[in-house]
Length: 622
Image (cartoon, rainbow, N blue to C red; front, top):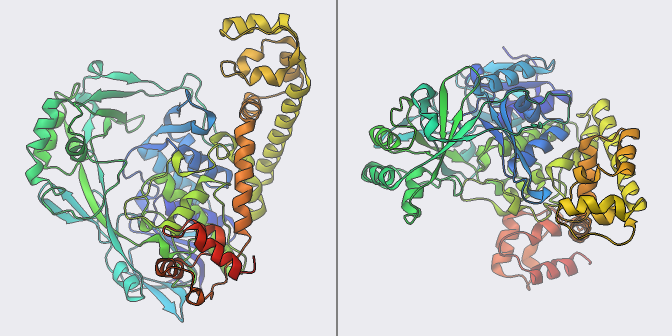
């Protein structure tokens, strides 16, 4: 049935699997995507949205690297918002509300246009390994599929168990069966596995809600978009809404705690710390009288609504009673109740920086199988695994992003170096160089790297080069062009900023916290330069950020350079830590387990202190 040998087999058609299959096929690898249901490729299993705090930066990075999550998000968006605009640009985070069905359709259409990509519907129950190298997979029907590399992106399907109150049943998500056999196959090869939990809220009939009792949340007046390509910004948008729980709602929820799988011992695995269920919030934050509920439409042409903030595994009758006591939900009709799901994952410390497993050559893990949560985290891993699977079979060095290059680099480094005992979610606080890793400059940071890989096309690269050149010109203009007090003082007065008494360079004025690029555009010389040089607002924003935050940017670049010096001190794969008497037993144990590739990675392992790094530097001749 499957003649010859595939270059890459991708198992799973979620966000990680879709990006992995697209990347490998775009890089000319003969690729096969195997999934349990071809009708659910790219499905949004939980909330119908992409982006958000730190996640929006990841989507921009995926797009800059030649992935498709940004394009699909733009083409299926029903609302766009730039979050955190009251804070500095390092915190600005794009987010779209998506049309769930259109999102999946766009992904399917996009993948079917790939000439090097085949599809097959089945479950994978085993992998074929010979002499420590991957040779393929085996389907539930016993069909062997030969491949030079395999990317596993199994999501929540590995031995998935769904909980609603005291009831539980096998399933990977609502309406779909679990995947069995593969965990046991991997464990037989020596892999360690664990269990994690996530949850989802009820879906309800929007026609049964009273939106007048809620607070409307409209999209941005001038919506931007995710992709740096030619996708079109939204011209019309759908609103979301906010309401709140109350002490009465909390009391109704508590009535079901004795039947909750979270509290009666039926669920023992770890759930996401930063996206807890409603019962967990009520229990942990007993002093809070209310919690926010975000009412999010599922698409343009459906009445289905996602009740964000009300994730739960309580019995369905308790869910219904409690939700009917929320403002605007007094007459709510359920489409389906919320539920929790437990699933197998494999601690990511078993991976190399390329996401290839240490135990089996040519086998890659991406997404929730690595202990992460979130579409964006999964998609970025899938993209990197797909790229590196292609590079691996072509005997090329892996593609690795550093912590100062991308949030994706932070994500993967955290996973393989520190591991995770709870579902890992990206936050801006996890990145020590977040002033460098902004959503506005992802194309400048990453498109040249993507172009070298063959993913970004000539048009993308040319656009980035033009943006960089125009930004440099505008920064130079602001640093060399002077203003006169009579021009600038009326603008300063309007902004309650101290007037000036003598001329100075424009960069001094734009650096003031209350002034923006729009204010300075009123100065004739600035307006003339912008028009004559065809400066876009995107370029103007980039120049403004580079000038205003130059001190912070330069400081982070200097710190990153210090870290990169340790990156260049490589640790051989067969390095013998046991001969170093000055290392503690804990340090030897963790270094032997993680097997860091360089001193920089070794320095970030929990339990490794500066004196341990000094010992290693001496041994390595530094």
